[in-house]
Image (cartoon, rainbow, N blue to C red; front, top):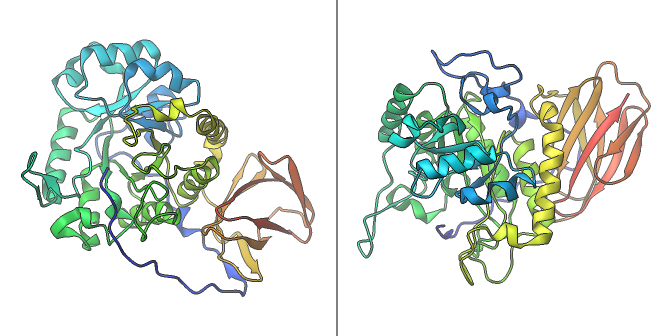
Length: 411
C-alpha cells in the first residue's frame, strides 16, 4: 500500500444558521448496465443488467474482502461477507472450485481459466488492473514510471466487455481520488482531471484511502477523506457508474495504532451516505509482521464488522431506495461541523442516516418537510436501544466525534 504525502486540509466555514441539506451526494439514480447488457434479474438492484453479475447471486449490497484465500471463505461468510474481490495469481481452477463449494461469489481477473472454467458460474465480475492511476513500478530497483494512461484502461475495458458482456467490470483506483496531494501518482500528481477519463474504463468504480493507518499529517485521522473520494466518484461519473470503496479493517502498516470499531463504522456509513453502493474491507497487515487475514485474528474488530454487515444487509433495500431530496433541514445548535445525512422512505417509514464528519462533538436539530409525516412521531435510533420524540416534525440529537446515528421514524 503506498504511503500518503503531504497537503493541507481546507477548513470550510461552518454555518451556524439553518442549513438546508440538498442530499445531492446520495441523490443519484441507480446506474444501469450498458447497451446490449440487459436482463431481468428479479431484485437484482443496480446489478440487474448483468445476467451473471452480483444480482444473479442475490447480492443487493456487496460486502467484500480484498485478495483473500478461498480456504477462508467460510469464516468470512459467518460475519456477513458476501463477495471476494481479487484472487492471488488467479483465478485458477482450484481457487474457483473452492469458492464454488463455499458459495462465495468472486470478482477476479479475466484470464483464460476465468472465461472457460466449469466453475466460472461463481464469478460475478471482472477486475481491471488495480490502481492504474498510480505511478507504475518498472521492476525491482528500477524505480517508477508514470501511471497507465486512461485511454489504455478504456481500451482494456472495451475488450473485456467484448469477451464477456454478462458480468460487470470493476476498476479500483488509488487515493488520488480523494487526495490531490498524493505523491504516489508521480508526474500526474495534482491532476484530478484524469479521473473522469479513468472512470470510463469500468462499470463499478472504486478507490481506497486509509486515514487511520496513514502516518502522514495531511490524511492521518481525517476519516472524511473516505467520504470525499466517494462523493467525487459520484460527481465525476455523473451518477452513471456504480460506486464502491475500500475501507481499512486492519493495522496495515501502522505499528502505533489501528482503526477502532467506532472509526470503521464511521468510514462505512460516511461512504454509504455519500453514495457508495459496495464496501470492500482491506484486511491485510504488513507490519510488525505479515498477516494476510488480520481481521480474522482481531476479535473486537471482527465483531464490529459482523455487526456492521448485519445492519447494512438488513437495510440494503432502504439504501437502494430513492433519496428524499430537500426533505430534511439540519441546524447545528451552537458550534460544530454539520453531519452528513441522507433520508429514505421505505414501506411507510422514514429512515435518516447521519454521520459526524469531524472528530468533534456537535448538537443538531433535524426538521422534516415531508408530506404525510404527522407533527408527532417516534424516531427509533437503531442499534442504540433508545428513541426520540418528534415535535412539530423535528427532533434534536447529539453526536460525538465521528459518531453515526441511524434513525427509523414511525409515522
